Image (cartoon, rainbow, N blue to C red; front, side, top):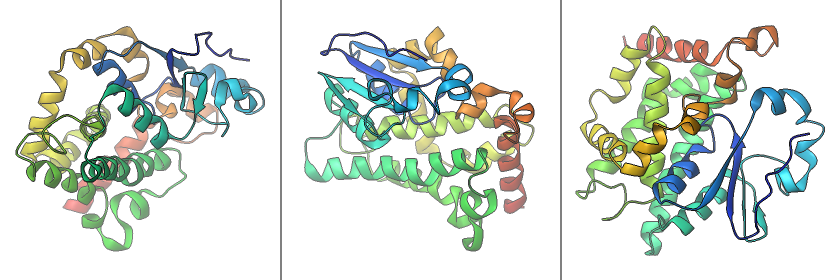
Length: 272
């Protein structure tokens, strides 16, 4: 059984699998803010494919009250659920707006990215959702799916002259936009139809391009992305990426990159 990291009650700990998934938003905020925290990466290959379902999942010290990752532990308390974990890290990092309307907008943007892009794509990679129905757009056509969701982010940035997603300061929403655009771009760059898909999703979105450049230039973000810690998890959108080609022999379906080729080719076909 994997052991929970021994830390003092006062020290912040972020525990998540060794992929980007639901954990990268809070990691980016914690590193950017220079927080004193533990970034605990849990091996998908050793733990998830091993004893997770019978051991770690049922350890409150490891998987929290809701028996899942991510987990945030701080000041003797344990938090589950992605949104709650991310918002807590944003609060202590100083990335939640103080104005109630601005806070609501930041949460709105993060929820849109999480629910309508990250989770739909991730679930389709695991074959829990259908590419055409749930990601591309289904009955609503291509304009109702991921193309529209990305266009919404361009609209958000166009409506704010500061360059940030909300108000005049960086917020949790900026890290969410940066993360989803970056991980999609990374994965598409590794498959045959990916460059065309990148052009379709992001080619006519100058404010997203400016925002990506701004976020990548932040010193702590740049340093983290050059680190060994980021290399262990940052290039994989889901645990499937960490598993690699073994998905076939484990009867888990296509690899993560094969999934992204499916998505990219479907986007290109739908736009033709």
